[in-house]
Length: 323
Image (cartoon, rainbow, N blue to C red; front, side, top):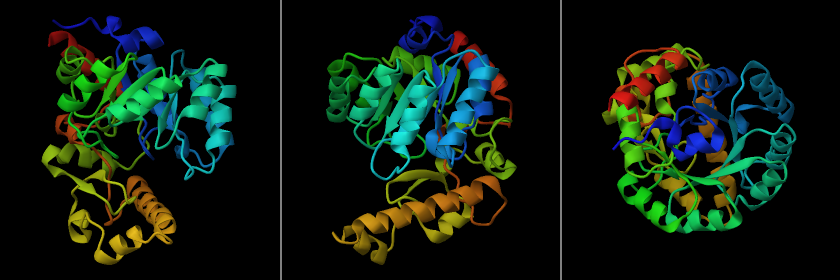
C-alpha cells in the first residue's frame, strides 16, 4: 500500500510536500537548482565545497532564503581534508540553514554546534556500525548510501542496507541510490525508506550550471555505461564510461597503488590524487573537452531529455501517485 507523500517521515521533518532531497553533487549543485526544488515542494542541498570561500557560501545561503520559502541544506565534508570545515560550519549555523548533511568523517562536532543553532543533521552512512555511532551522537536522520548511488557509492545494495538500518536504528533512514522515477520512489518508501536522496536525474536540468555536453551525456548514456573508477580521488567513484575513461582505465596503475600503500607517502599521494581528479572533473563539467570525466549514477537510465527541475519533479509526483 502506497504511503501518501506528505505522511512520509522526511516530509513531516521538514514540512515539505514531496519526500525528495535533490542530492548535493560536487560541481553540479547550485542555488538555482535548490530554489527550483523548494518551489516544487521538495528540498535540496549543496556541497559547501562548491563555493571557493566561506563568504560565497554565506551569500548563496542568503540568496536562497530571499528567493524561496522552504527548507534546504548544506553538505559538509567533516574530515581533515576539508580545511574550511570549521568556518563552513560556523556560517551554516549563523545563517541557520535547515539541515546539514555530513560526509567522510565524524559528525560529532557538527551535531553539537548545529543543534545549538537549531539546525538538523543528516549523516551519510554505508553500514550499520557507523549508523549506530552517528545515532548515538545525536544525528536527526541517516542517509543510507547504497551501491547504486552516483559519485562515492556504498558497498551494499538497498535490499541489504535498508532493512538492516531500519531494524537497528530509531531515527529516519533516507535512501540514496538506485532511484530514477516516481514509481521507484514509491517502491523504496514501501520498502522502508523515510525519504529519498536523488541526484543524477537532476544533472540534465535547465538550472544545472554544467556544460550542455555533460547534460546531454546523461540523456545519451544508460545505466550500463556507469563504471566505478579509483583514478579520480583514490576512493571508488561512479562515472560515465566515455571514450576517454575507456582510454585511461578505471584502476590505479602499479606505481599509483604502490604509493597509495606507502605509510610515509600515502597521505600526500591521496591528497594529490584527489586534487588532480577534482581538477579533471571541474574542467570536464564546465567546458567542452576530449578529457570527458563525468560523475553520474545508474539512474540516468531514466533521463530522456534536458528539462527544468519543476518539470522533472512534477513528473516524479505524477509517477509516484500513479504507482
